[in-house]
Image 1 (cartoon, rainbow, N blue to C red):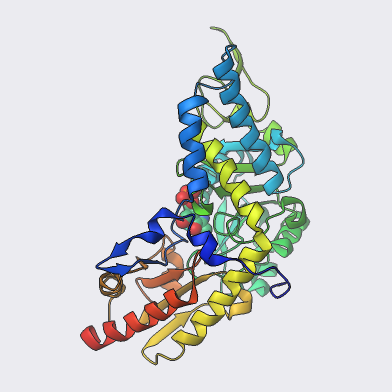
Image 2: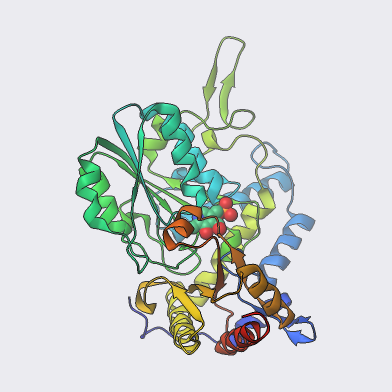
Length: 414
Ligand SMILES: Cc1ncc(COP(=O)(O)O)c(C=O)c1O
């Protein structure tokens, strides 16, 4: 991972863009360490969305009057920004969805239900978010396909030596994996899995919800067939995400949602579908939110994804070093060079919800729970963990406050 040669982030200047970071919690400056769940929003995105709603808002695609044209330009302009952000070949391949979850469901339903059956194998991993686990489990059950997982080792890395045995168990038709694990931060070998999937004649579905905010994501370099991402995890508004898919696959699929906008013509006898990407965008989309998604992409791109990745790498290295000083804390997952800015841990003798509650009194916001990865929690032998996650606005002093807070947690409850 190229982490040293990037221009350093001016984090104090970046922090000034985020209104929430100016607030006090319990009289203390907030240390927001929950960006993996959702990020804070910079003024640039908030201001742009306000301006859009005030002066550029109308329904898209249908109007001939000027305001509707302006709204359509904003919405379609955002599609081009997503295309460029993931290095897709065409905006026809970029579908706006409600979330990364909806993007994956679209593929599971529209591709999976029509292409899977008995004897086929759907492969996911032990560290998938439920969003990339449950839809595939459901579709496998519905179609009679078998549902297999790639296990992880004790460090939270995929055990790729299981692939041969999985391949021998049937016709592998789908491989679905996250590029970055939301619970452990593990960076997964998606390029390698894509190549393996294609050798089996399978499609590769990448959940990039947790990767796209933090590192350059290039669908062509990954060699995948579908990729899902989400706006709210990369400084954009909630309520919008995107699916990228190869045009020939999207062309071959039936629509996922039905209604207005996704049709070419409707008659009592027969309805035909609109061209890509509109075939998959039924109804009024999240117009201003898609626009805000595009502004967030501009914001991150101007700062530089490589610099953001390098900053997070320094933070995670620092955090792992500081947490190692606490003999009552057990950290899960791989070493710093194999993970993004996410650290899950267990505090000996204290439930994660109590850890998070006491840290909140100290102004430190972390997440406690299963992080929508219950199969992974079962593998780790815990019901829940405490998770701290970092982003471009995180500073090492906030990690120090986390560590000081954990010492208090242990003193009070451990
Ligand atoms: C790895 C991963 N996949 C999928 C999702 C779901 O994304 P969304 O909130 O856009 O549905 C998340 C959100 O936590 C995630 O971390």
